[in-house]
Image (tube, rainbow, N blue to C red):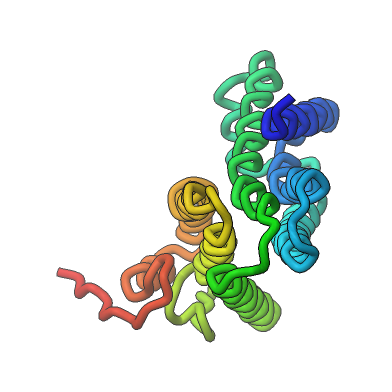
Length: 262
């Protein structure tokens, strides 16, 4: 059986088991943590199957594990602290579908996430097939990945420190948050640009541009910025609207002058 088909089936089975668990505990939010934590599964399969040089194998495994564990454990901790309450996105869907259809329909949500993991794993697939020495573009990709990781870590650290020192009604405009409303999401995208560039050093890797594009779409249009902005507007009101007027939503940039009210 083709390796990619095998990996797709394995991911589908993992996420179907996750769906069964979510039905049992009545909390679909676990799919978010599963989505992040499952990336190393296909990566390890690729690395076992192909004979990439040891350094490339080590770098690929490290990038997958660092990204997966950092995000996955953060999400798992948040989900556990809120359980049995579901993420508002899933609660809204459950209310919309009703109790009879919700559990069945949520299977599609789990399988969509399995598909996303499969697609995000493809840069690692092409890199794992490369048995030659590392190229300059791979080192550039690794550097971009590290920059993204450092930037995201600094963003999270600045926000956590601010939350410990301030009330929920105040806006975090310290450090990177003075130049972007979501610097953590921006540097998350940088991480995946780095992974893509690393894959470009291997035959076929250039065709995996879908990975960073998918991540940017998810962050800016789906599960990143939109719900975060909605929540901040609800809790912080006009103060956050002013922040929106002066501060870039995604790419860190200089402040703008607030619009004058007529």
